[in-house]
Amino acid sequence: MASIRNLKKDIDFLVQEVISDCCTFMYVYPDKKREESIQIIEDAIELRNKLYAQVNNPQENPKREYYKAVNKELLEGVDALFLKISELTK
Image (cartoon, rainbow, N blue to C red; front, top):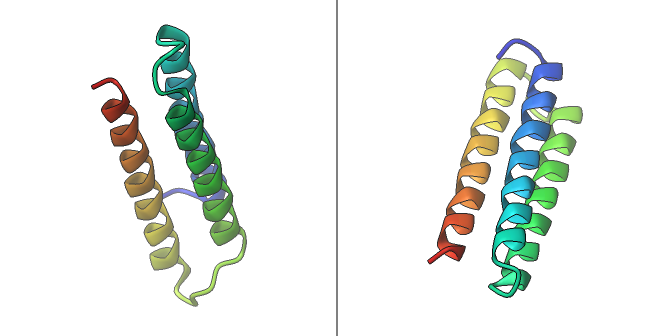
């Protein structure tokens, strides 16, 4: 991980991709599982806010390990959201 700035950009980009996929799903299937799509968007926004709070207020002293853990949490959270989106299409 190069910097905190890049971590914040990664958070924004990945959450934006989740939201974009949900919007695309709602556009392609307007009558299918709209409320579940909106819930995934809300979960993505909640994840973004939580991760930003963690990045802006580091709790642990060895910062490198702390930010690696935040990055890992980002990837796991976004992966879970993408799995929920793929479940909507079934």
